[in-house]
Amino acid sequence: MLGKKLHVHNVISLAHTIAESSSYDIDYELLAICAEHHDDGRVDQYNLLGSFMDTVISHNVLSLNRLEHFLLQHSFNKLDPSIKILRDVILYHGRMWLTDLSKESKPYVKIITATANLKMLVVVFLIF
Image (cartoon, rainbow, N blue to C red; front, side, top):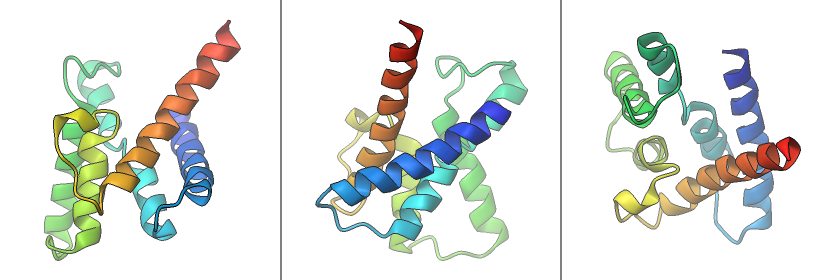
């Protein structure tokens, strides 16, 4: 799990850097929250499978379940636009083709997806 903590830290940092270089109108606090929580379901996925296999159980769906549980426990307004953006990031990062994202959510999902793609390129580069 230490590797996942490092991953989240890297995603937060990279997301901020990408957002600064973009023309998107981004709320940096919301972006940091999205980056921090986009992979929350990985904990449950690992506990269930002993691995990180999205083909068996999607971490996106498990992450969304965690968010929904949290929102119910803490009486958040589910209609708050930032909650919708966080939901979309959790559910669609790395798989944007599954839906038509709102103009509000799309930049956040694109940035979080880009951080994961960039991290993969770095790993491949370091291996070869």
